[in-house]
Image (tube, rainbow, N blue to C red; front, side, top):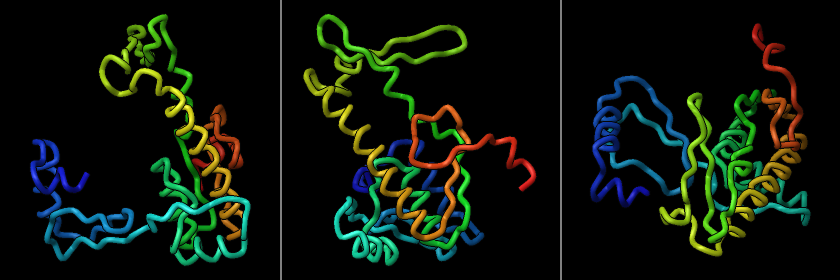
Length: 193
């Protein structure tokens, strides 16, 4: 990603870089180790999350040590996992997450030619995109996409365990979410907190 930005950024990326170069307030960018935008600005500070995904049911005390010290993470298959992990590392006691339904996989179907179709619902109707024809998913590779979802849900499970171990209450305010690793509650209960 960063090599693309450094060598030949598209118009939107170039505009973002130009905007960030002119930032005149303190801005913190949180990213994984080794990633830095090609920007020189003394007002921009980087904070890094370990790039090492190490999680599981083995050596829990050692894994917790690595996670607490940011020497490894609980998995970054999803950007929200990184955000929650960052909050845990930085001493937040409660993390409220909204819009965390993780239901995209319901939009996939396979047609008679084994092409993967993705259904996008809009207020004016449904649209189907052939992800195989567009090159997003190769013919016969649907298992890979389903495995990515399984990996993501597994990482949420271990992230939840780490949060509990650290005394952090992570609450999913999307009550119809497929993520069952975190407590759920109605967003209206937190309007005045």
